[in-house]
Image (cartoon, rainbow, N blue to C red; front, side, top):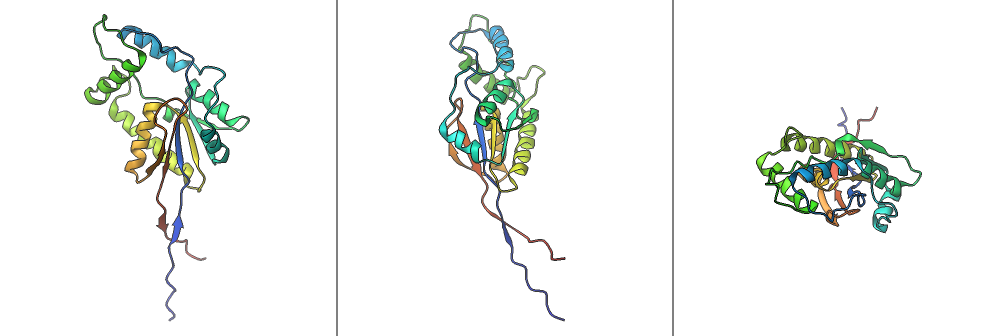
Length: 212
């Protein structure tokens, strides 16, 4: 009997995953609020879109032009941002990509902070003290981030890039999941509005299909 020739492994290469934050929302952050006022602020922030007249960065526009898939969260600020980038191009919206909740800690009413500072303390209390007020807790959000990362890896499996228009903190959590799954952060603009962070997977070796 003639021995069957050894099959050489083939390279399996995914496209990159670009996690981008939405544009600037149509809600002024130049205010100081107490905890109760911040809850109302965040409720408005969650349903509003973005300020009109914004121009996305040229680099992000180029990524969208060449990507194989563009997706957004189901929040209006993400949808409107994706539409500005996509033009007439269709894209899918996924609830899995929405921001994690921001319930503020119950500081005394005389403490008045900017929305950015409330965002920091809300995340701190949520992350380290499990302060969720009956909303999504950290463990549930981590599981959702893992699910989102797996979905994006599946979309990138065909070899084309995937661009995501979503949210600052949950994008951080998705990036954390991607790194645990072996992906590398190869480019970062931080977490400001319209910023992006690009992840790539090292080329892996797969087994070619059997000949029929």
